[in-house]
Length: 157
Image (cartoon, rainbow, N blue to C red; front, side, top):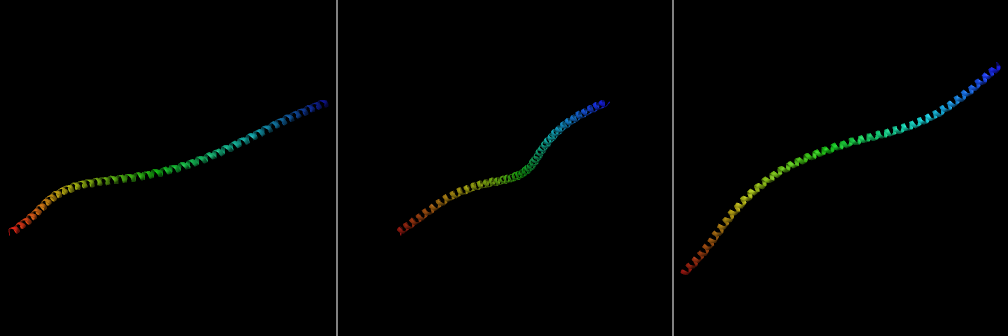
């Protein structure tokens, strides 16, 4: 009985050692797995930090682009407003030029009419000058004849 008990004890001790070895092996495997899991977790954390940093960078770039877009839209609106004002001003000036051109055309027509009248008056003056010259020439001949008549009277006396 003692031998059996000793055999059972030895078997139990061997089984305990075997279980301890199995437990130690499993613990070691679990430790290695835990280390691998921790390493994997650190790698995932680093990747997540990288992705978070990239996301923040993209968000910042997106916000900067949105700001730039809003500024561009503001500049476009300002330029459109300025273009509208300039176009309106040009339209007004164009209308003023049309009125002035119309006035100039009327002045030209008036000048042409006046020039026609001046030409007519000049023609009449030229005719009158011709008549005056004819009368002047007749008066001179009369004076000459009067002088000759006087000279002949002087001779006759």
